[in-house]
Length: 187
Image (cartoon, rainbow, N blue to C red; front, side, top):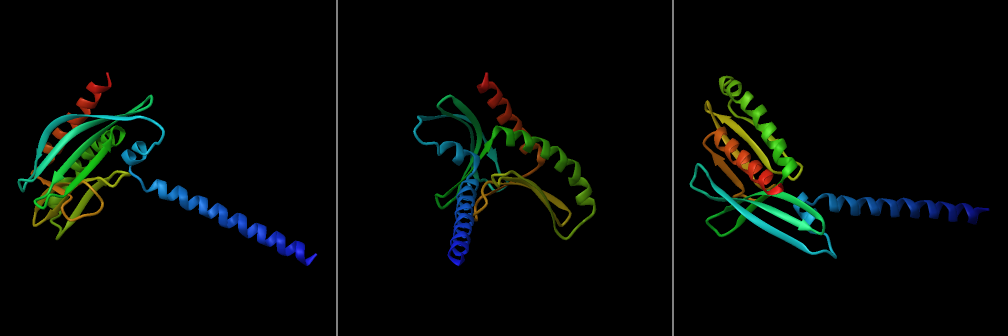
């Protein structure tokens, strides 16, 4: 009888450990961005085509290129708005924003623009207001010394991954241009 209980307990522990190991494997895949997840499919031909868009003019004369990347894997096609910032040390920060996230960013910009004047009037020592996509791309502004500075943060990690812009209108233009180009390519 004792052997049966011991074997049952060991089997139960084994099942729990195996289930936990499978959950960890799922979490590792969940850490991928949407473009990484889509492009990591194996056993299929992966084709991508870029359509260049106008560069973003940053406050500090950064070189920031933009494009729409159309990715085709088998019968599935996805569109990503890419923002590529080169640093003076030849490193790159690239944000790849999936079309549905781009639509959310456009909505978020309207909410952020509605708040910015109130935040400036409150004259905080420092305030930050931002929207973050599931892939870690950020758009927002910070208020310091009575002024708002808008920014795009391309990647979660790194020191030269942020583009500072003069105003919200410049962000609206690049997001809406990207949306229009994707809609044109989808036809």
